Image (tube, rainbow, N blue to C red):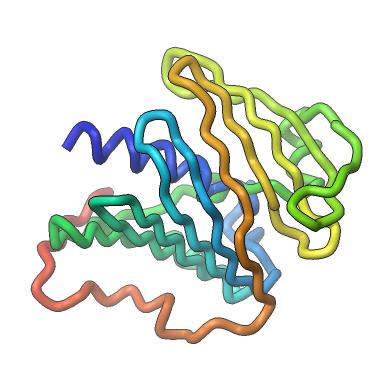
Length: 196
């Protein structure tokens, strides 16, 4: 379970890069369905999918070689549900008003991010930012490149004492997602744990 938790923690950091809010009403207004390739020093390679309906509902799917977990967030209601497929478990919890993390340019300014200028990253014209965050007993440094054309991060590199985690955009769609992707009903037969 320790290895799973360390992997989940790393991918939650990557998954959280697509938007931040200080209050619950500030959820992503952009509709998107993006997939990313993730290389992480502790968990190896993974695939990350992030889906937003533009109304405050977000789905994040992380697929690793031996496991998959899905987090569905309802930011207007400040609720989330994480599905651990291999364990057939569901964890439901409340979100705090500042739990939504992201990478829009205005949010980078709030983080006092250093402006890295512009460059093309995997075919997208981007603007880059670098900032430091505290994670437990150590600091991590993140370099994020946000696509001017898609309004979402294209590549993010987080450096920690354990090494570098790199998340790179693979596919992007602005098509409206199916509402069933954001259902907060646990899959049948899964054990449900509710945390406060």
